[in-house]
Length: 289
Ligand SMILES: Cc1ncc(COP(=O)(O)O)c(C=O)c1O
Image (cartoon, rainbow, N blue to C red):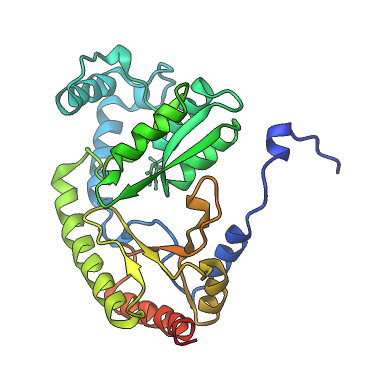
């Protein structure tokens, strides 16, 4: 069938990396590719209880359509929280509830970006944001970052060179302000898994391979030698039944191939050890050459 897509949809390219990642769904693959939280830590019973209570007390209004901006009592709570953390003067009328932050990113692109507008972002950056913005055909301006985030002097340079930039997209931290009674439990488990993954990378990867030492979030970022291509190496890793995400799509203007991302939150200890060993076995061949 001849489907008439929009020019925007026609401009979207199939991703070789996405095809590669499909292979990671095979059950025998130890995949560090996803960004998944540990399912065994989901507060299923607590959510069940809350759901039952809401259905009992306000079942019909909970299932009814609500205002477009979102449930007012929730917007009031969000406004209060943001006032104390962001030091901004806010009321519920300033708050719009979205379905996750991804929808907020989509909205901001729709609201602010014309074709060719400059978007300044960290290099590398969050893939979901890059894709949300890319649909509006901006000019991405990448700014180098260090362990503390975007390098301010580089940001100043980028702003001078792009005085009409429409957006600065930065990921200021890893935290999620909701549900502190759950977060402490997650922190302990993720902290241990992170330590184990870093320890294994130090032990099994060639000594020249660099990695970040994340103090939050779900991922570590690995840097290979300049001439290596993490997507090509991943093809060999898949044969060893282990996977990560090659880093190139995290650079909005592409071209940097020697990085990859590993997730440490989702795998039990034995799989972290075995998976990192397998990646190390593949990498060692490249560094011996
Ligand atoms: C930096 C960043 N922003 C946004 C999102 C998307 O979040 P949500 O699930 O709330 O849409 C993610 C998810 O991984 C993320 O890492």
